[in-house]
Amino acid sequence: MIYRGAERGRAVIAGPRKLIKITNLENFGRKILRLKSSDPERRRKEFVLSVMLVGLICTALISLIITLINSLVLANYQGAHPLVLMICLTLFMFLYWLRYWYLEAAIYLFVLILAICGIVPLMLWGVALPQGLLICALAITVSGILLDARWAITLMVITTVVMALLASLQEQGIIAARTEWQHINPDTTDAIVFAVTFAAIAMVSWLSHRQTMHSLHSARVSERALQIERNSLELKVKRRTRQLELSQLEQMLQLQRFAEFGRVSSGLVHDIMNPLAAASLNLDLAGESDEVKQARKSLSYIERYVDTVSRQLRASSSRRLFVVEEEIGSVMQILEYRRRQKMVEVEIDVSPTAKLYGDPVAFSQIIANLVVNAIDAYDEAAAEVPAKVVLRAVENDRSCIITVQDWGVGIKPSSMKRIFDPFYTTKDNGRGSGIGLALAKTAAEKDFGGSLEVISRPKLGTRFTATLPVKRAGEND
Image (cartoon, rainbow, N blue to C red; front, side, top):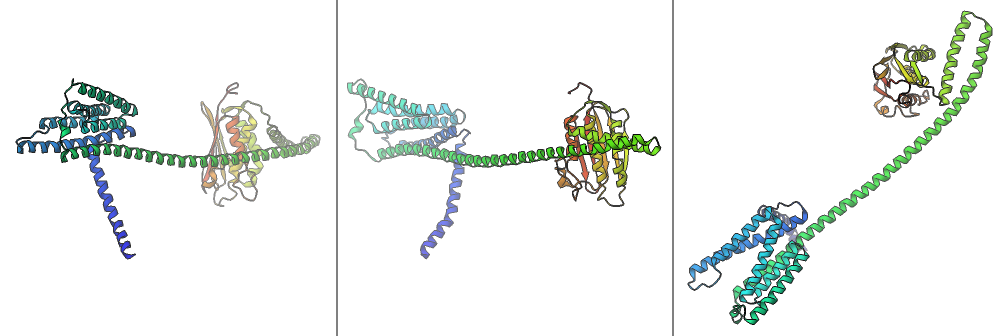
C-alpha cells in the first residue's frame, strides 16, 4: 500500500512536468506551422497539410543527405539520383510557403503531386509495385481529408482507370515495365519504405481524427454554453414576466383606489355644496356690512375651490388661454389660511405677461400641490430655519418655467425614486395622502405636455421645477 502510494505520488509530481513538456512542444509546433486561417475548417486543413509537409521536408532532407553520402562512398551506387531528391525537397518547401498564402491551391497541388508520385512508379515498374499502390492510397486518403469525399471518390476512380489502362498496356507490351524487382527478395530498405508510407497514412488519419475531435469538443462546449445561456434567459424572462404581472396588479390596485377615492370625494363635495349654498343665501340677506362683504368674499373663494375640485373629479376639461399670475393668485388665496396656520412666508415672483393654453383647473392643481408640499416641508424642520417658500414663474418663447423652492427638511435619497408614485408619502402619522405630487406630475405631463422635476438635499431644502410648453388654441389640441 505504501509502495503504491509512493508511486502514485511520483506520478502526480511527474504529471506537471510532462504537461509542461507537452505544452512546450505544442508551442514549438505552433511557431513552426504558423497557421494563418481563423475559420475552424480551413484551420484544420492547414494544420494537416502543414504537418505532412514538415514531415516530407524532413524525410526528403534526410534522404538527400543519405543519398549524397552513398553516392560518394559507394562506387556502384544505383539508388535515387540526388538531383531528384533536391527537386522533391524544393517542391515541398514551395508548397509549405504556398499554403500560408494560397491554401486551396497548395492542397490541390499537393494531392496532384501525390497522385503523380504514385502513378509514375506504377507505369515504370509495373502496376503491382507495392510502393506505388501505397502512395496512390495515400493520395486518395489525403484528398478525402483535405478536400471532401467527392474528390476522394473521383481520384479513386481515376486511379483505378489509369491502373487498368497501364495493366492492359503492359500486358500487351506497348509499355515496357521494369519488373526485375519482382525476382529480388525484399530487403531492409523496402521495409523502411513501406513503414514510412504506412506511417504517413496513419499520421494523416490521426491528424484528421484529432482535428475532428477538437472541433466536436468545441461544438459541445459551445452547445453547453448556449444551453446555460438559454436557461439563464428563461429565468430572466420568467422573473421579468413576474415583475410585470406584479406591476400590473399594483397599477390595477392603484386605479381601484383612485376610483374609490373619486367616488368618496364626489360625495363629500356634494355634501359640502349644500351648506355653502345655504350660507351664501343667509349672507345675501344679512346686509352689506364690511364683515358680511369679507365673509361673502371668502365664501366665494371656497365655492370656487369646491367647484374646481368637483370639475376635476368629474374629469371635465375646459381648455382655454389663461393668465398664469391670475391662476396662481387664486390658488394662493385658497391656501392663505394654511400658510398663516403654519407661519410660512410665501414669496411670489410671477411674470405678469406669462400665459398658458390649457386647463386652468389642472394648472391650479399643479401649483396647489407644489406649494402645499413646500409649506409642509417645515413641519419637521429646525426652529431656527426661516420658514419661507419662493414661487417663481418665468416665460420664454417655448415654455413657462415654474419653480417652487423651500428650505425645509428635504427628501431622503431613498425616497427620490418614488416621490411621484401614487399613494407614496414621506409624511408621518397619516398626514399625507400620497397623491398630491402624483397628480401634479400627471397634470404637467398629460394636460400640458410638459415635465415636473425635483432636486432635493436632506435638511437643506427642495426645489420643484415644472416646465410647461407655451401653446395656443388649436396647437396639438
